[in-house]
Length: 356
Ligand code: TXA
Ligand code: MG
Image (tube, rainbow, N blue to C red):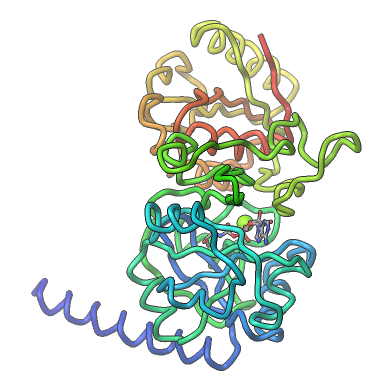
């Protein structure tokens, strides 16, 4: 019966949890679900364990990892100081998709976690499996997204398997993640100003309800972060790498009206096909009918951007599976989660934007 099935599933999950905690205690790596994306966890105090994370991902070692805790008490002895604004943000958004960059206590964590910086990014994830795993392991978990470096972040255990099978200790499968994009990374100044280093699951509007002022890291505002010698170096080191890029050539199309955008995209796709390209379009549901006959990857409803956030990484993986070589995407409205979706989309497109 279903009840026996549920009981067996519960026992299997329990056993998986125990095995995962034991692996982590032994210095191995384990992938686990969070409310944003799957993370690849390791004991943040162990340099060997943290090095195994960098190795499994093929991640550049100058890009620091986020430390995950299950209780703010774990910050004692790990961070040197928490100002009033940082404290207010924790109260408002933890557990949840917000990472705070705080001054780190020397030697509390492996220096590989912080990539030599004097700060550490910390968050308390809002996912029962993640919270339980951190508690059972009995240590803070350094965990970047559980993808090979340069691939879209995983929103399913299957994505982790595709990228990291044979390279890690294990995977806890918690089904699809909720938000679908990574956490918002912020630094809270002593003057009450919150600087967004990476847009994510907590929106600027939500932060503004708690902070005195919210500003974007100037490097995020630059057109092509980190690549141009004149543009400021991003304070979140990860932002300078080309991420999430599908193998096909992706461009984002912006225009005065959805109809004009759709018309331009249809023509461009037909031309690309005439040159032998395998084409696709990323479109919001409201405009899907404009692309009859095209390969359409749906981003969900334009006025419900959490759907685009949930789907984007899966869609980028689909582009590769389907072997598409030329991809055009509609742009996102710049409000709410749109900032984060657009940030990831532009990175996936290598900042190629067509402005009509
Ligand atoms: O939602 C998330 O944040 C996911 C889940 C697994 O928690 N994790 C994640 O980790 O996205 P990762 O390693 O893929 O991205 C971490 C980002 C990078 O852009 C990194 O540069 C930045 O956070 N970061 C980490 N520590 C930092 C620090 N001390 N100062 C500035 N940026 C930091
Ligand atoms: Mg990542």
